[in-house]
Figure 1: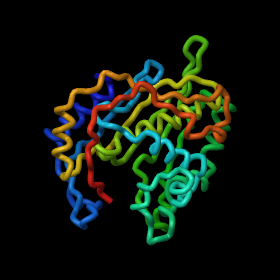
Figure 2 (figure 1 turned 60 degrees about the vertical axis):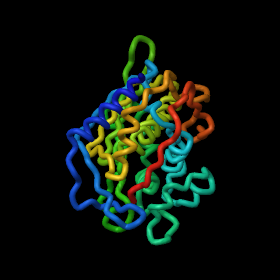
Figure 3 (figure 1 turned 120 degrees about the horizontal axis):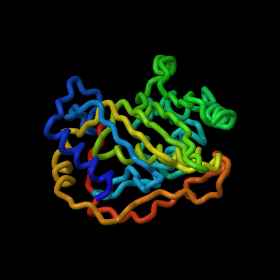
Figure 4 (figure 1 turned 90 degrees about the vertical axis):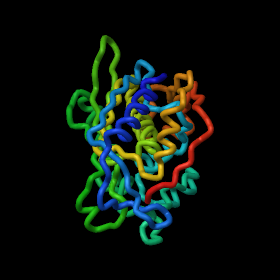
Length: 279
């Protein structure tokens, strides 16, 4: 059992046993009914990527290729335009959050990255002083929320720190998420930001170090309880999945492509489970 599988099962069991019910739930299922959930607060996990500890479960297949393409849409293309995500990357699951047939998701995610030139600022800071303690990506923008409709960012803050161990320099990352669908999105979001961490590390020729993941509200929706029980019954695969970025050290961040990522030794348990998403 991988570390990710162990944490996954522990979190599912904790939510099912100790979780409390949501009240005045904002999301709805596609049939219009309220999407209630059981949740816990303050979930934290630590993975040492340098030791092969990656935050991806083997208990069900995770769509890593699509997840990584979303990161490119946000941090390379720096746009909220759904046509870019649809046409350039073939990823369509964000279409359910389109704002009023506008073709975009509101002033969110990539639009905020572009608005504040966040990536160029982070890269500049790390180049000038790798040991500075101010490498923060924040997508939480009250002005944007007041002036534009759309889903508020879930994975809204990322922080980066550098460590020297012997002759090697490691880049660590911390992802903070206000809300997370444990069964559907947990490992998708984690691996997305591991990919971003790897892109920045590769830009400077550094090693990837530790990945810290904090979720404030970790939940399971009330139409997913049978799937939760099935995941608890499953025995994990014996594989040891790890993500590789196949480009030379010091490849420019903006020259890296989604197809440069390869997920190795990943043989998850099947069949895939079906989930009706809360919108």
